[in-house]
Image (cartoon, rainbow, N blue to C red; front, top):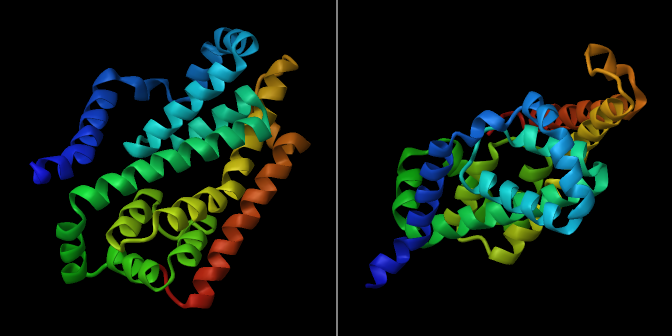
Length: 235
């Protein structure tokens, strides 16, 4: 019975992945779909702001937990619909919840088996596990601030390294803020242009409300490159 209970979180996660993919919801993860449904979405948000935010957080958490493609689009949508700071905050909360769900599912269900396989095969997963083992909060925070490894891989590696849940969640929450608010700002900028009746095109990158977040994104990418060069290798 204990063995069955141990696999319940993983089973729930797998069922969620299958349900999401079968539903075809991924076809709605585009800016075109967002614009097509914008009027209805904004009307709902105007009359049900708290419920809309809770729904967005839940959707983002689920998307993160099942590693659904389109996280950037969802982050842009948060800024587009709720503005930079409100949308960015909802995104950070949703992403952190989703990351914790994956962390818990992996640690309780497949921890020992996956850890043994990672240790024998080496590779990026093994290096991340070793890094987390040496200092969970600082290492996870670095990987969240400077995305040297895929988001999902850090979730799995932290679980396999038996990182403390509090340190993992806090490092994730803080570490994803810069990139999240940058993308949310870009979404908000595009949303502001649409509200003014302008059609977004390549020219929008020269608008200050879009250009400044793009510059920040470029600086973040530069920081990633400089960090990699200083370390002399990539993960």
